[in-house]
Length: 123
Image (cartoon, rainbow, N blue to C red):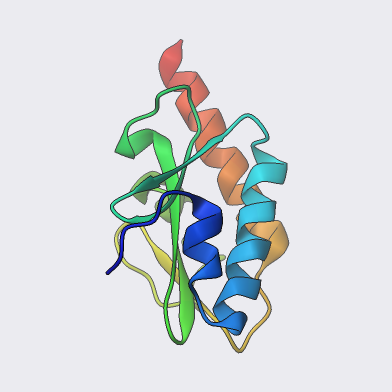
């Protein structure tokens, strides 16, 4: 897999259908967490929800041939397990198929949940 300098570079290198889904996911993340910092981590787009946030303080996304992967953190996945039951999941990830619309409200709620969770940990 090539190494990308920016999230925009990563998205631009994807097929058009994947680009569209990633651009939508990117916009949802940044709308829900406007102070998030974009970066590349593990060669995929990541969003640090706290300044200088390490892996467990980031959301990540990745493009694949049939889906986009969203990696919000295991606690977020557990909190939204019922809402995510129709999607293929991993411990800290969910796959949104390219042939279905992204669940925009759900993604926004997940981003805000993780952000609030991190804010609570700082107290």
